[in-house]
Image 1 (cartoon, rainbow, N blue to C red):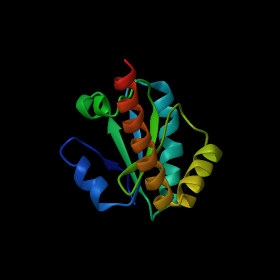
Image 2 (cartoon, helix red, strand yellow; image 1 turned 45 degrees about the vertical axis):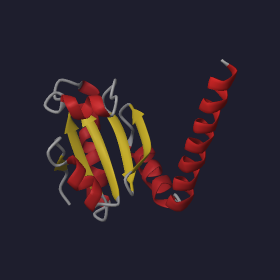
Image 3 (tube, one colour; image 1 turned 135 degrees about the vertical axis):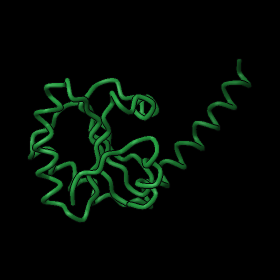
Length: 133
């Protein structure tokens, strides 16, 4: 599958219609981004069952800001509408393959439960903090 270009117009649709997406936040002037591009493209050829997408942070500044991208390239993996990985830096091929393998092995029910538990804990801590202030 060829790499998709993500924009603010198609982002929600692509994420909602696909359960496993790798997103490369990049810019044309970024040397490490240009070095990572063939690694990312190679992985897309080896994993045709996954969606590989790119966000040009210059053209899509609102999208980059929404994800608080501060350094490029940044690789993000979204599974079932949950960002399960986000890391700046150009990964070598072996590291990218390892990250993809780990993301494939995630139990998304457990991930969602962990998120819910963390949110409940944060809400509880917020209430306690206000009472003691």
